[in-house]
Length: 90
Image 1 (cartoon, rainbow, N blue to C red):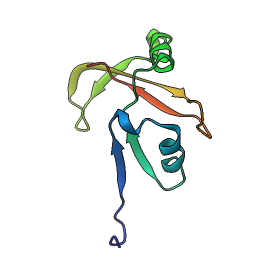
Image 2 (cartoon, rainbow, N blue to C red; image 1 turned 180 degrees about the vertical axis):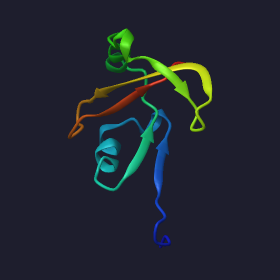
Image 3 (cartoon, rainbow, N blue to C red; image 1 turned 60 degrees about the vertical axis):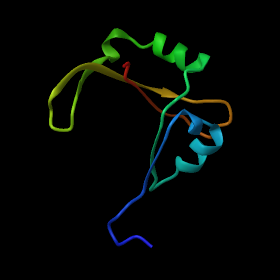
Image 4 (cartoon, one colour; image 1 turned 45 degrees about the vertical axis):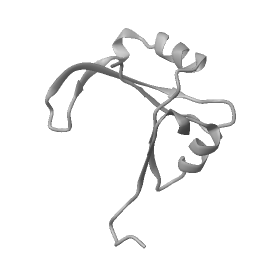
């Protein structure tokens, strides 16, 4: 049992990029992050991002990293609802 005010955040590599897992964690009160596999649908979403979608990526402290970040809405076969796809090239 966690102390009051504590939370669990789930984070997975691309092995967790499955509809069943996304459906499980995409519920009220749950926070999660999954690295998306670079399947054809994800590559298409990245390719179709508008130039204006890309923003400078800064650390939580506001320090510029020299990288850019973009976000879009995504879904996959078997997910019950859409989810946020955050794109940050390495």
